Length: 401
Image (cartoon, rainbow, N blue to C red; front, side):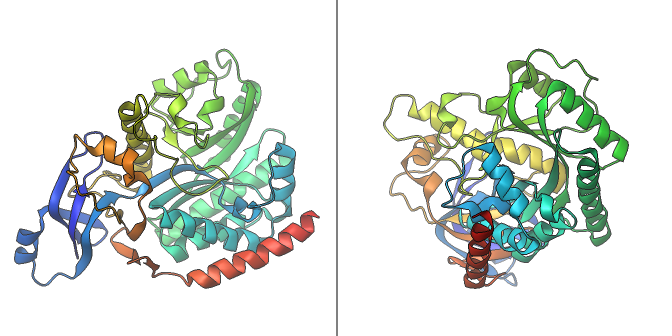
């Protein structure tokens, strides 16, 4: 298949922009990128995914989400105790349809890879299989885990680790390249973090590891436990992390994700990935055009939205993820953005602020499969998903009283 004609933003730390371009996809990966006319002439037998002169970008990576909390929209939950009550009230069908609705919303905002953290104490067993089913039906990339909280009873912690490990074994048997089971934990203190890491190690759960910082009020000073070992980890809610943790995580090559909607510009560090948390499954708001420092803010925004998360996800879903280069996974999105002015590497930050970052998504491809074309999602009945999610939300809200 050849995608084009389009303006291709190739992604990565130094994003080149190609005009009147095309992208040839072979299987699940990108084969060629270049001017469209020579690609069509060299491969007349290929199907064409009509780009309509739109902007073609790598799919986005959401580094921290709570997909099953999609059904809480309108409840106004803010306190941690309220969210814990909500998580305990979830039933298996709530996890399935709520997560599928959340992933649909994400895809409509150009998100093709999601890192999810889940908890549902009343339906812990097989809860992750419902999440995996949601991701598989839609066709996106999904990494999920059941988060072990240091305040959980020992039996619940053990059951949560077994749930994540069970999904990991199932996915290995199925050889599912778009789904990943992680080990997850919610750390509150240094001693609790150390204990949870030891439990994960003892459980022989396969890497990688997603660590959610819950409050992090007592994570002060240097960690007194063992030196971190093993593969790179993902730490979410970096905005709560003390400097000691940030420093140690970076030293060992970990990724830190930030999840404060609308507050990204308060920190100029571009190395943080971004996460939607339990809010709208969409990238954060871009900087306002014309404000002081907007150009630098837009550069930081680009790094966080298209580079940092993809760099971590490439370890699990394929080298080159987040770029439009030969050999990279074919995860692409088409944006309805048609500026009259030049769009190139020099003007890209200004275009991000002027509307590119919030342009409507008209098409999406994951691993070479077109999931959305001309605004229509091909893989699911979107009306059915929305209706089933509403039914689940009504029942869930009644259980919550």
